[in-house]
Length: 147
Length: 414
Image 1 (cartoon, rainbow over the protein chains, first blue to last red):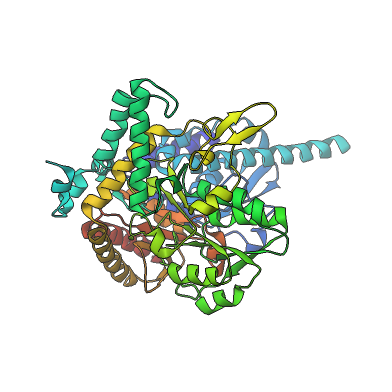
Image 2 (cartoon, one colour):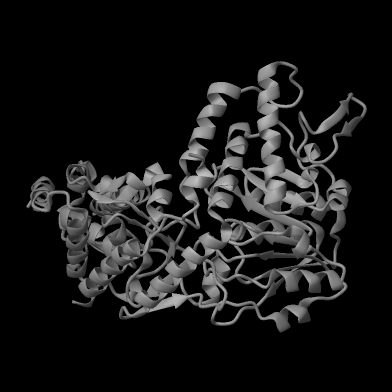
C-alpha cells in the first residue's frame, strides 16, 4: 500500500467514529495496543523524539531499501497516535517518505482532540521520521558511491 | 437584589448561575471544571466590574488631575483597602500589587534577599513547595552563597515538624512555606512554623496561592512577615496578586524595579524613592484587573468563607471516598487537614491518558507534576491527576468524573 492509500484508509476508519471524542480515544488506544512492543533496551534517551510532551521513542532500520520504523510511548493515547504514523510511513522507500505529504491528521480532526501541544509533538515525530529516512538514504547513497 | 442577598442561602444553582463559563459545552457535554487550583472561573460581578472599568473609568492612575484619572485611582485604591481587610493587614500601605504569587516571592527574594542574605545563611523551604517557592530562593542562594534547606514530609504529605525544628538555627534567615499545597491539598501548620522561625530570628513568607480562597487569612494572627496571593485563584482576574509585608521590613527593602511611580524625585545624579507601597509598584500596573479583584473578594465574603469551606470539604470527602473504590487508584496526599485538592495516580495508566479521557466527557482536570517536581520525586512518581474543587462544583459532577475514570480503568484492564 502506498503512503497515500494508507492515509486514505485511516481517514475512512476514523470517519466511522463520527467525531465522538471518547470513542476516538478508545480507538486510538486500541491501535496503540496493537503496535509491536519495542525492546526496553531501545527505549533510550538517544531514541527519544524531542518536542513531545509524553515520552516517545523512535528507531528505524533499512530493510532492503524499505525503511522500517519501531516506536513506543509511555502514554497509551500517544502510542496509538504514533502507531498511525508507523503504519503510514513504515516499509516505504526513503524517497517516498521524504516527499510524503502527511494529510491524515487534519482530515481526522486530530488537532481538535489532542490539543496544540500534542499536535506540535506529532509534527516533531513526523520530522524525526523524515530525518531518519534522509539519514538512511544518505548512507545507502554513500555505499553505492563507494562501490 | 444585591449580590449579598442573592447568595445568602448558599443555593448551589444560584452560585453556578454567577459563572457564565459553566454553561459551556465540551464535546457535547456540559463542562465540569475541576482545575480550580490552576485558576478558578470568574463570577458575573467580576466580569461586570472589568467591563465597567473600561466603559466608565479608564485612565492612568495616581498623578492625573482629571476626573477619569480620579475615578480610576479611587477604584484601584479601593481594592488595596479591600485586600487589607481581606487578610487583616494592619495598614493598606503594606499591600503591594504584583502580577501574582510568583512575582511576590521573587520580589522578596530579590530585594530583601539580596540586601540581607549572606554567605553561610540558610533559607528553609519544604518538600511540597511549588517551583515558584523553590527557584527564587535557589537563585538567591547561588548568588549569595547561602544554603537552601528542605523540610521533609511523611507519606501522607505532611511536614515533619520535628525535622523542621532540627533545621532551624541562628543561620536560618528566611523560612518560606506554602500554606496549602497545590499538589496534595495539605494545609500546613503555618502558625506554629512561623513562631518557631521567629524564635531563631528568621523572617517568614507564606505562599498563599492555594489557601486564600478557602481559609480565613489573618496575617496579624499568623504574625507572618510576608504573605503572597494570586487573584485568579480566588475568582478574580489573572495577572493580579498581592504581596503583604510588614511595614518595617518593606521600608528596609530596596526597590524591586525602577521606573515611573516608584520614585519621589529623579535627576541624573540622584533619585529618591517613593514611600511604600508605591516604591514596589514601578510602571503602570494592571489597573483594570486590580479593580476587578475587589469584586472577587466581595464575592467570597458574600458567600462566607465558612460556608465555602464546608461545601468544599464535603466535595473532597465524597470524591476521596468514591475514588478509593476504583481498582488501582492511589490518592497522593492524605493529610488530616486538607483543602479541596484530590491528587491521585492509577496503577498502569499514565495521567495524560486519564486527563484526555476525562476531557472527552467534558471533565477538566490537570495532569502532570503541577510545578512540584521535587515533591513528585519524593513520592517516586512522574505526576498525578489532580481534581481541585471550588464553590460551584457539585457531587453530581464528581459522579461524572468517577464514572469516566471507571470506563478508562475497565478499558485498560481488557
